[in-house]
Length: 609
Ligand code: DCP
Ligand code: MG
Image (cartoon, rainbow, N blue to C red; front, side, top):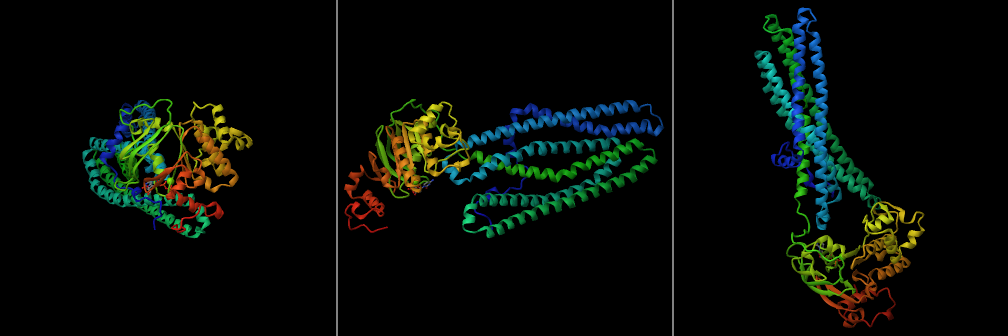
């Protein structure tokens, strides 16, 4: 069984090389190309120096050991030492360069991803769980690092090594070299066979890791519900299944490895055996010197090393390709609302007039959520929107903030069509008080000014005073410097609400949007306090208030009733009651808890519920 939060699309593809993906990756490497080129040059030098070592040993044996002298020993040893020192320096420089390139590429990519995420529309976040996006920024980027530092260049090094060794083998003795290479088809066949088996094993391993992580993440964050409904046992069983599958997948990888290594070792041993027999005969026939013989054997050993590691490289390449693909898919995801090139500037200060002109809007083409909505809100006017659930109230707010673009009509702020204005400037003039106020990790003061340096400490305090948040803040031992934890878990709902109010006021927007549905679940004393803060927050400011409880909106200058995306009534509370229309019905429904005599004489056609 797959868990709910698990995304099939995160399943890994099996390709170890995809030229399109690699081509795109190269674009990121390009700025560091001279470093990369230098690293590759060093890599070739390192390979060459490695190959020189057995040749030096050969010289030592043939010149001195075979003749029982030590005449040439000193310069051979000195040369060997030089080779070792150079190897050290080159290897060090090469790793350093490579890590530099890789870290910079990673950093560039992370930044680009994050910037991209910042521009994604809010609907994108409805569809993509946070965990998955964070994985792109962390794990997938690390897979790239692996590709650059441990994957691609190491494969290049291996190839250099194999080619270099092969050439040297032929230079030393072409007949022996041919015998060695005769084993190649056997090896190639074995490698192919194992590569396929391992690819599947690795794929299962990654698949089950992803599944288990997704399950764990979802069920840990939902622990409250799990414990509430006593689902621990079923959860544990499912987790056990996931974990067991991962164990099996890991074991199958180990099995393949365990079999592959000895098989390669065996082929290598057989080759060595044949070379000892044939090469030994060559030495006796004086066709080959002892030094050449020893060098040849050492080189054959070097030849098999890269082969042995090929499976590991293969796995790294595979997961890196999968990660690359996921990163690029995310980067290709169209960004949300974008500023056009000729976007105009809004003035520093505006009066705060809001116009909706025949606005038609749909989230999915065809299903109209707003069907031709027109209204004007004068500067300083306080207007409430009410209507049944799904009427389009929240959508209206989203549109005014330009989280989505509308299909027809125009939305104007002080007469400027917001679709033609710079997005961030539109939002700067609009304050938003959310139903569920978001609190960041940091102090109270940081949470009010949101790291905007242009807001002074005094302004922060003023804002808190205005909305009445200063009362609870001053009671805290460290006041405005009080540290809040993630999501404000160490504050009550009411306190979070007041803090959010203060935040909105500190930014001093000309238009204030209030999604006032949170007041529903706090005690009546706090509710009165919040109600009072709301009044002050919206006083002398163009305000749009969305409320379910009509008591909150009674005092507004105007109330607009939405129904199925259309304005059906508007007026003051009293005018609307007198209309005896939809607002009156809503009002009646909310009066159930109120003594009967308060309720206006009921109209007979109203069925309860
Ligand atoms: N809708 C959608 N896609 C979204 C958000 C909403 O298709 N991302 C649909 C669901 C509703 C319609 O749009 O049918 C209006 O949704 P609103 O959130 O605007 O409705 P309200 O805010 O009026 O409803 P509520 O009072 O429940 O908050
Ligand atoms: Mg809503």
